Image (cartoon, rainbow over all chains, first blue to last red; front, side, top):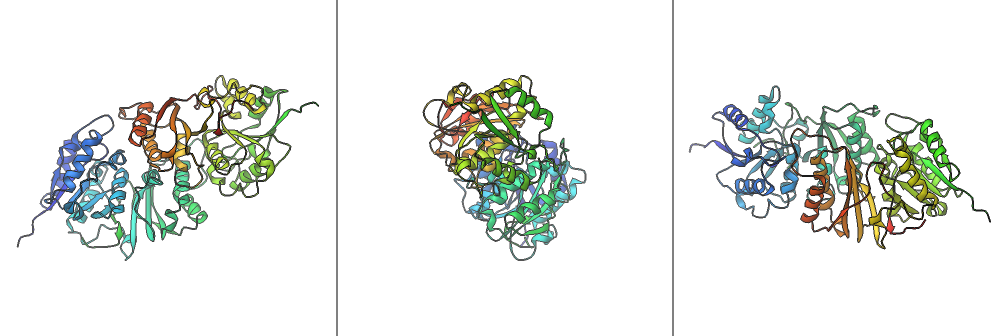
Length: 279
Length: 279
């Protein structure tokens, strides 16, 4: 039996990508995987890659397509939370058999997929990472994970041991607190990263996150990278790691050290739920 | 009997003020009120007006001081949430007999005061508003309310009728969702305002707020002003009022129209809980 190429469906729950980007990523994938970009990826309506209904329908259609092995979220940028209540009504067996990969804004969808126990959910690079300097490495890491050809080499070393893991952007995770869309994170190692947020905002978000009674049931928190922190008019007086340590200490959550995730080309893969190095 | 002047204690749960500002506001108050600035207002530690413990102790000491009729929060800027768990342990009868006034970051303290049924809690101008162009009018409005000399003229007309009200900065309110510090807002008119947030962030915060099951018990939401919205690289495609209408509609919360509150000199007073025009 000849194993067919991994078929990966790409949808954009937040902002749009352009066809040039799709072409670059397709060229990079080469023979390793067949990439199927949903036309919705290229729609534009105001901030978003098309209206909420179009983004929800594209996600549902591809999730339910049995010829696709995985759903890869094209890009972040904000918008995924707007389809949480309208994109999950019809998901069936094909959706449960898939891998889902993305991060940043796409974390909202990872949260609900994990909450509902649908598919294999993973936090990791997206097609739009090709726009970063050296971004091909990030995209190759994602493709290696999605095709299983990397034998787990792309997974964050801190998320390889047996255990339960979840990874989120701090801003996205904070926005999900109290909404009912988060999975049960009891006993999970929660890995957090962010980009472009002032220290005082990181502090406020960590207040929200660590004050939540359900989050307090995690096994511990690991901090990924917080990139491109803007300079405030007054120095906050604590680094992002000091902030996370502070709030963990205050809420009796174990701080477990750093994670190898972030809005950058080094961003490693974290598989939600039970840790696993294989595909 | 000669009625003594209203004595107003001022503490800074977030950022510091300087003595020049205190002098300006004292001059403005004149004979109408005696302003007592806690020395903590002038402390500086990194971002904050002194360490968490100092800010918490100043608040508790003044709240418990029976010679003070009101606590007036000096300024916003971030920090009040960090004393929510350490500033309420010793509050007694004198704290319950007081009026508390502030907005923006101070909303965290208003939330817990209202949650715990302590004092008369109000959203309105702060001493630091004197730094705005035309800010004397805002400070006079606050003093008129705190001394009762304005006969309720400073209260938002939308919050004068019998009913229950609460008012918050959108960012601060969103940060309190899921933390356990918010009061029961069932049946309340919830009034929201913001400053300096991108439309996409306002949209995400309204997602969080309106997705919360407890918030869905409000009588409705009114939108104050959202000032100084930064220009995004791509137009969001909806105004702040359209954003709030959208999320209200999606979550079956009544949108009740505008409120006369905001980060500006027109910011009116909203008394939490039962509406009341008198002092």
